[in-house]
Image (cartoon, rainbow, N blue to C red; front, side, top):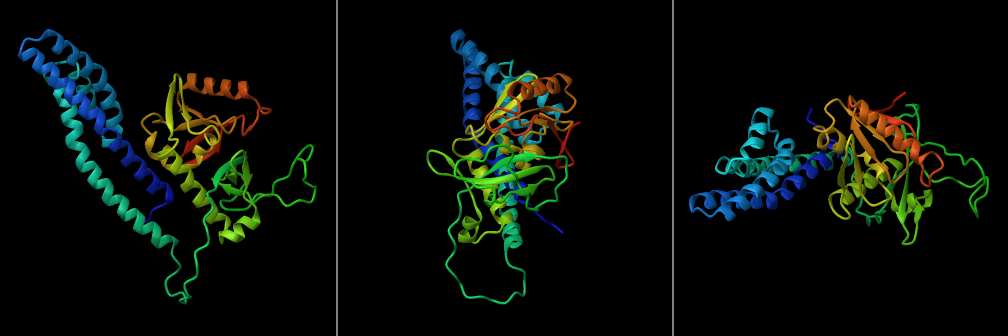
Amino acid sequence: MNTTTAGDLDALLLRDEQLKALALPVWILFGVTVAAVLGMLVQKPVLGVVGWVGGWFIGPWVISRAAPLLGTPAVVKYPLFLACALPVLSLAAPTYVWLNMRPARAELETKIRQAEVRERRRAAAPAGAAATPATPRAPTLEALPVLRGVAHGSWAEGDEVKLQISGPLPPGMTADAEMPPTRATGGVFAVGYHVDAGSHWTSVNRDDLRDAGLSLNALHRQALANLMKRVKGQPGMRLVEHPPYYGLLLDGDHEACLVLLDGLWDHLFMDKTPNGAVVAIPSRDVLAFCDANSHEGLAALREVCARIGPDAQGAVFQGLLRRRDGRWTVMD
């Protein structure tokens, strides 16, 4: 049976956005490589040198980002890197990317449409259910996920996690106050939900769920969709290279929640973590990761966790998580 998940659809949409973003750099690369060739043909050294240097700097950047999106094999990718240094052969890089981007995007658009249809069918009511009169649709919650905690695989997917406050109670809260709903996700995460109240974040409570006509699972799917909108739109996700590891930047509040977006780890960052990803999320605004076989990266991630510590504002988890077979597990 051909099925899809929200993570699969998000991964397809994200890959399409990445390909669209390459269009302008490809045209710039094509321009500088043409300038290098013309400079050589008409004996204009300045034009030729500027074009050659520009192609040498821009070409490898374009190829390194286009190759994983286009599925370029190593036997093609590395000769393209070398071709960027040669004035005439440098035309091969932008030509290859441009010719392969169009069919790749056409194929992606087909897959996205098919995935959207399957997702709508999956979310629809079961076939044969009695027809009910149309009712006004409840307002949606612009909720986002927030990580409340991490455990050693002790929760079943979708279960509600009962939270307890340790230490002094916040102002205005009594010992018998009802805690905001929190969902077990991925076997290791306790995920809560909050909305932007302008100057602060407000937790989604059970009354909010009833008013919106949402179950906890539906709220979770909606919150992940809202998080993906931030990744692809505003403020947008940025990858920061900080050898021997990478970091992700988003909005200063939800970086750690990016571990919940399966499409990032099972598709987008696979080229950077061929042996699986290991992630550190010591606080809500920090996410760092490296390849599981990088001893230097693992040591650096442990230093990040030790530096931030469990008493930091918005602390989440001071251990490391490893991605295996599409799931996160806590590393010993």
